[in-house]
Length: 515
Ligand code: FAD
Image (cartoon, rainbow, N blue to C red; front, side, top):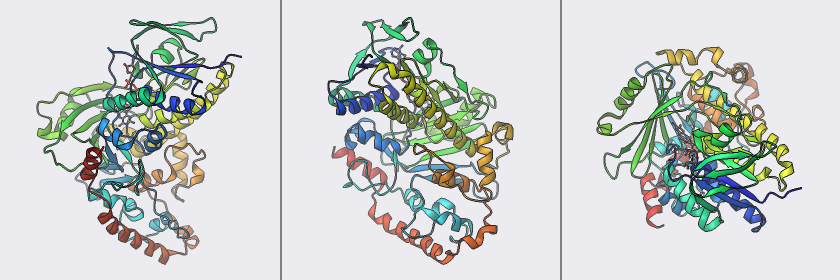
């Protein structure tokens, strides 16, 4: 029996530093003399630098590592995110009917003892023509009026509206690095790993760096990003591509200054569908982060940049675009022997719904809680970890694919191919078939580690105008009058909340000023 005493994280991007902070905080809490957490990052190899939108789980993660919210906002130049506004996703612009919808982070309102509003919206109890998200939650109204999700006086990472953040990925990694070293005892090494040596069992014996020579540990965490230096190149854990389901494999991105210093900052990500993918548009404190995610099988790099610059207009004049390659997929064996991948080294799902950092949080959470105290138990922990990660990846891929295959767009080969049933996983097809006759239910999702809860599936499904026909079940919903009143109450509560919650930019600036 050999006690696990030292973990070495290789890579200092979002994955490396989040894993280091979370792990160090957890192991220190149990035994300050216990497991040591070291991180080595290259002074020469940069971060990917995109990854600016997060998921509400980030608040729990930042609170868990004890990072002060104001310090985080200042350091990462962060703003608040309350959902995603989808433009031109339902149908192409210029065709009759709504072409947009909002996916808020707040779940549909449900008063204790009150009716579940979802079936009643389907049965027409909401004011006529009111979109699902606007009817069941006040968040759409609040973001339309540029409101932030919390009041200045609310406690760290708390607030009446569920939310996440937008931030600058490189700045975020720097704040985490400072916090990890100062407050959590992470030991940082600045060096580039040049090679890795294995022991007789095929486990990693040591990594060898250019600047510092050998570094050893009991467990190696591969956070080297798309290079996947340890889990891919050395441990040869195969990559399972899911490019047959999610076609986007390129991005062209830019950092765009605001037109004026007091321009309003949307507290949601804007996702605008295009002929071969979609454009993200994110408001940070001093600039926008914008990028076109597209499929190289459906357009060229030149055409993608032309479409992208067309979207940005004069704001892009004189700015250089960054081109990025990726592929949706993952390594089913994220953890092999004494090497575990966190972040892009293990896999990636194209960035719609911002799951990259959320998957890092999940992997870090699993790693921390499954970490064996003794290296002999590594294999069992690895199997458990891999099983959980595979399930999450597959469910996320289904969720993202749903956005594409429900669209009524057929205006380009990209959208036509996305509607081809051969590209839709059977698991998703089965769900959609059932949801024609009943709305999504909690029972459709079995694990308490689900990333997207039932309400997210409902927001996208009904935002996309999916039809669930409840007419045969109408007798099961006798509370139409109660439901009508609830829908009115939500509108009333929204108009009151407009007075209670501050302007988003004003909130961010005040939080940063009083840091
Ligand atoms: P990286 O940021 O690439 O970091 C790799 C680290 O490894 C660096 O520190 C580097 O120095 C180090 N390294 C590499 N090789 C060596 C070596 N030999 N020796 C020592 N150190 C080494 N996620 C979201 O959650 N939201 C989004 O909106 C989002 N948008 C995205 C858009 C695009 C187009 C793409 C491709 C990804 C996006 N992601 C998003 C995913 C997100 O970017 C990543 O999950 C996140 O940046 C984590 O990256 P990482 O830390 O794994 O890798």
